[in-house]
Amino acid sequence: MRFARLPRLRLASIALAAVTTACGDPEPGAGESSTGSSGSASGSGSTTATDASASTTVSTTTMSTTDEGSSGGSDGTSAADSGGDSSSSGGIPTEPFSFFVTSLRAMQELSGSDAGFGGDLRYGERGAGAGLRGADLICAAIAEQSMPGAAAKQWRAFLSASEGEDGNPVNAIDRIGEGPWYDRLGRVVAMDKAGLMGERPDADPVIADDLPNEDGVPNHQPDPTMRPVDNHDTLTGSDGNGMLMQGSTCNDWTAAAGDVGSEGIPRVGHSWPRSANNGRHWISEHDAGGCAPGVNIMAEGGPQPGDYTVGAGGGYGGIYCFALYP
Image 1 (cartoon, rainbow, N blue to C red):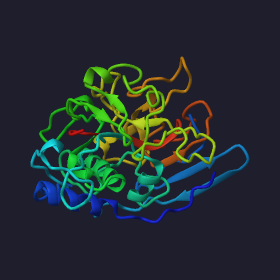
Image 2 (cartoon, rainbow, N blue to C red):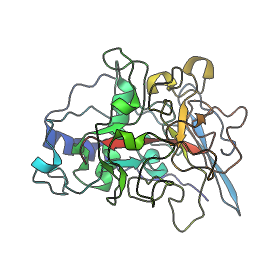
Image 3 (cartoon, rainbow, N blue to C red):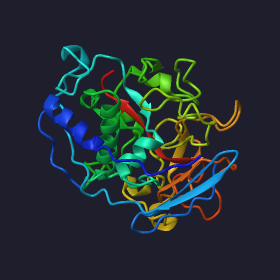
Image 4 (cartoon, rainbow, N blue to C red):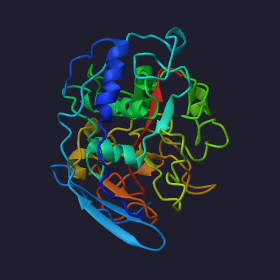
């Protein structure tokens, strides 16, 4: 399986235009896998993609995303009140779409790198809480690309942080509203928070053990013409209840050098389980290798020694995205 550099679609600009139109002015910006190599202080990383017949390694340097994003606000309009349409003209779509796992393709496009973002999700945001705000913008941009107008549903990344904008700890489970949540094809992910509390969400059986990406495609096999890949590690920084795990957030999603001593090691869940009885927890399964960018999708039983990337255990630094409105 080979990953070539994909053209950038400027998804953030599309999404932010929809958010600004529907929801008012943006708020001020504040600021078990293969042998991927760790990133440098400038955010470099490596991509390793392998199938049964061939092995191709593509090393890339992560491009800076400092100027790529800006923050967006909302006026609290619900989908039911919007008169919703699916266009980017300002209406909030009425189709139930409020959850996805960010696909590798989308993370590569938005980061401008085959290695993805790593643990630095600021996406142009600065100041207190920049990592969480940037991750939210990433979610909104990807949702908008899949369903025009969906950015206005107010998307939240399922991530915890030791300090939010107010300096207090942030728990992922407290960021995402009360539900219900549906995937891109309208299938139930969970009706409420209680439905998220378990090894797997209380979801439609079709998707419970393979949570889908922004297009409703099972994350285990994002390309149906290719074999499944080992990409289940998904960043959360959280324990099994969606609560903060200290030292597991890449300095609150602002760091991607791969320096374990200063950045910690991010906690990940599994978007799909390794087996029926092992590696099943969607929120909190194990630690990744480190915070550096990296894509590693060939199963080798877990993070390998010396691999300090977010993808070291089988992934690419994907995140879960939830919308506040169905």
